[in-house]
Image (cartoon, rainbow, N blue to C red; front, top):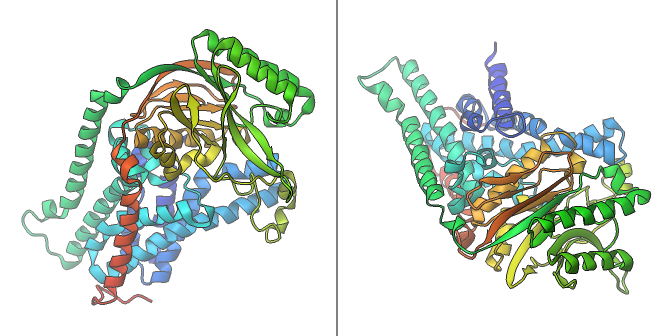
Length: 524
């Protein structure tokens, strides 16, 4: 086997391991070694271009394995021919693969300048590329490496300090330390020198990494054990309604009355179990709340009848002289039947709620024609639950850490998220989405309530423990207790400082490397 083919096999192996680090088919333990094959291959790469291509290969496998479900969404619900849907999905995967490619290029450059110890900077470089993926071109921060640890609760508590990016760095750092051990061992073998105690010295980076992980886990376990957040604040019972309405049924006007009556019935069931707030999914109302007076009156009457506040998703129209603007909105109706507040979705889904550069994506015409152009909201509006401000994120907004942090900084005492995951079908996507939503609870030190049309719906406590969880594609009513909290985590105070510091450190190392003598062979 040639050196080149071996290197690409290493890169592909990292892609497979990364994909297998996430639900539904993976396991979080795999993430800790996922980058090792790529990092081992990079020092032996003869050029920066080769390193870039190796990282690209890793990224292509990584995102193909975690985002395969997008093809189904576009083919089944976008009206695209299967081959066009595959082409569009492939374009997205290729774009996202550029970030691991840039990671590999930068690490290879640093290695050529600083030697093997440069591998220890790779966690910072990885976080810098994840930060870029979150913000560039509207951003798509899906399956960030740190999300792989959402269910490893003692370790996941690190997110309350450094956010999901801190977890990404911790996980990538373990791979980097192992790769450094491998590189040092290979160098010793080439020199045919193994001093007494040398193997222990060579293994020191991995031992230190293991020690750091254990220390984080011990601290996280103690934080969960204290459970201070589960005893603070005022308790309130929350109801979740999961209507389980298939996407094709949502657009069938003949079924709208039955769907609506079912939501009313399920809401009464939740209220009968003591729910003071009942949460419906995104776009759950089969009508525009402010436009259909008869249906809106029934919702308001239901709130007065049950004495419960209602939070639900509905499209909204803002009429103006320049034309009508449509919003994907969330309405909160108070127990007295009045409208308490409206939140308009800020982060819209490209090719889901609007089409950027329509002329450029002419080949996606069937999808373009089925999408209504929504306008983005402009403010992180809070909604009143009695005297307590709460917030909601609509659909994939919940994967944006800084947006949810804006709600908490504004005073939100409870996180909610409403979504329609019917688009995803029985794929990995609903499980990935739920895990990423759960991370926000840990970061912000807030209870999180999630209502999803076809699931997964649930309640997550401030430590990431899932208190209530529904299966997918089953109607469900669940009621559980949350607490309205006001304390702030370190992360809610400082935000993504760690991520930006990682990007700055990466830039400084690259600039400084221009003044250093190269280590090993030249870059080409």
